[in-house]
Amino acid sequence: MDFGPESWCVENYLGVDRARSSRYTNHTMSDETQNPQIDASAEPSAPESAPASGSTEASGPSAPGSQTETIDQIWKEIGTVADPEIGIAITELGLVYDVQLDGDRALVTMTLTSMGCPVGPQIQTAVHGACLRVEGIEDAEVEIVFSPPWNPREMASEEAQMMLGIY
Image 1 (cartoon, rainbow, N blue to C red):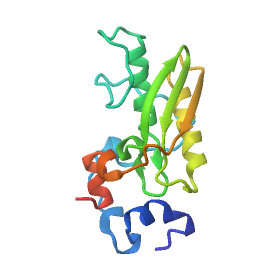
Image 2: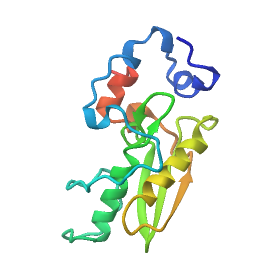
Image 3: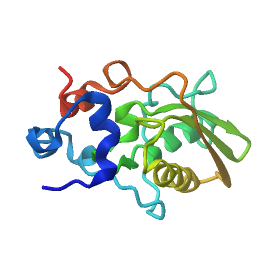
Image 4: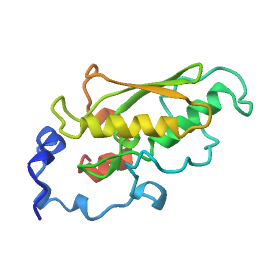
């Protein structure tokens, strides 16, 4: 199987040889997160009742249409965006650091698996589109930062770590 020259990002960082690793074929994620989409034009998902970790949210109870609910919906939509090189949702990888609201504008702070990641612009565009699918969001700013640097051992979910071969 040839994965092409652009697949160096995560593999070089983790020192993984894709051809020798079964983690790319033996996925254990739930059906909902197993095949996250990168299509920025998809229909919005129903809001989740539990807040995503790492979200910036207003304090107090969540009322319909509240800032907290909108941020939760944004996190859920961003969760449909997968890193196209490894097929894991960027929220599971821990690439999204923060989501905030400024009126009807979503402000997302995220990173990439490496500074030279060749699919960075594609991921950034997909996150922008995911934000715009949320009702009430008219604009989005997706800022790519490299501080703190991405560390999958600390930032990725346990399930994503297992898929990446980090035990």
